[in-house]
Length: 148
Image (tube, rainbow, N blue to C red; front, side, top):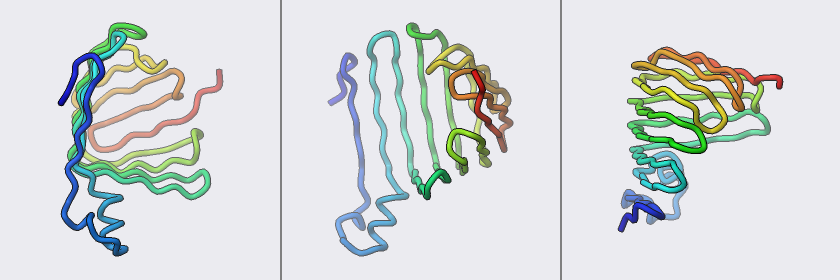
């Protein structure tokens, strides 16, 4: 079950995952119907994702997500309310130096979390802080490292 103090995790696997074939392994890598919810130390979050995957080659990284939803309330450390949603999204980055994303999202929220100051409304917005500088629209976004 899900406990508000310690959180809970769920994962529903596709029957193809039970096979050891390469196709089943790729399916498991990219189609991961999962989610969690947790509340601890001033941070409450619920997250759900239909499918997600990641590939890394050296400093190059690519991530893909389909059907993602996060709701988060932060009241120490940080302060804010956030709803992060996407229908489908693809992100590519070169280490922490520079990156970009394409997809359809309606992220909405304002506040400080994870060392960043953020503001988004229906996908338009950005953030600045520990993760660098990020500028977003509902269809695309770019981010770059910050020199502090």
